[in-house]
Length: 500
Ligand SMILES: Cc1cc2nc3c(=O)[nH]c(=O)nc-3n(C[C@H](O)[C@H](O)[C@H](O)COP(=O)(O)OP(=O)(O)OC[C@H]3O[C@@H](n4cnc5c(N)ncnc54)[C@H](O)[C@@H]3O)c2cc1C
Image (cartoon, rainbow, N blue to C red):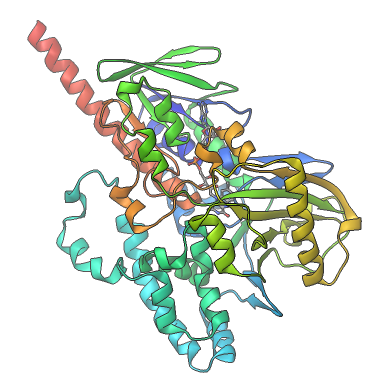
């Protein structure tokens, strides 16, 4: 049977690997000229920039994927654990977050007596959530309630603290505002305020502290190259520069996938590009979700990014978070009244601190990220420049060195680029917010209700945004394709039998 996968991001490539291994003939169609999707990379003026992800968390998930193919990550790249994991700049002080539980407990104890012990308790509960959340819940396609109905699963639901917010959970353990912010930081990845994120996601604190922050030497794109190499060795066919424009259907079956240059006849389709756009490729009657459904969804923030080359080294850690302005004000502009933020929080990644190979000798490679509400208008060069000046000034203040006069390369990337490059709904960067209402059954379905041989993968369906979820998504999508193809073969054989 042949399977056509639309989109060569991590989720699409992972799906392709599992299916090709099982004997399907897989073709991946990608509109852009290289694999990786949001995790792409570009090089210019001697700098090598990872365009999207920079945090390598949950190394066990990456390892489990390669192990399914008899491989290890070390067959493709070398990981280093960062210590400190990252630095957070608050108003008037900064804190380096050391790697590992014991070192972090000691730091907490210094800031608030008794907080070290509290952190141990918090992380022990977070570990249980990680094991349940990542190993049991996140790998369920969430199509039927019965997936979750086992004694073990039901008995463990209470431990997940689904109905306690992250904010309430953290506040119960810690009093100092700095500690509260440190513990709530990982929630930023989930695209909603801590008061709207279920306590289950303290599993991210366990991932952060206990499993560690890692970096693959050569850049995050090494992950993409590794999966691409594996997929190619398995026999997956890739076609780049092919923008899918239409999926034509006959009854409840997808039949042909039309790109700008070709038409592909197909037995099964996996929509591994942005879910909203994948549905727009179908005739209106074959779509499951209306425009009003999509506009009622809460999207995680998009972002305004700058890829910057500096002609000297800077006193920075690999990851730096600038929480030196009001989180409440920024969150208000992200979620409550979407608009451009006054004084945004921002994030800086300097991979050249760990890996000098990503910049010319003696230079620094910077990636600056400002979260902005998805779908807001007015994204233009002048505005991007204003924001750049704002964050640059704060960066200079925090590091105590001049940077502006040392910029030798700069490129910005924002909402309009996400839309143009990925067909991203409202220019989203990370898909939907992981609120309780948008978790598991609350996500767009992995399998179409209307088109029997259409499965979805990627960050807008289960389990959600991020690299580790993209691996889980690809594996689940492949399993659904296999189930569907068995059903299709059976019904085809039954039809043949009745006709004969
Ligand atoms: C700025 C940024 C920072 C991030 N930071 C982190 C991080 O530090 N750590 C982490 O774990 N995660 C991070 N993420 C999230 C992570 O990168 C994504 O969740 C993940 O890469 C999504 O993979 P995907 O395969 O679902 O989608 P994508 O990567 O978007 O892949 C979808 C692919 O489909 C293609 N496509 C779409 N429509 C069509 C069409 N019609 N025809 C052909 N092709 C099509 C697109 O071009 C794209 O290549 C970040 C994301 C961004 C944007």
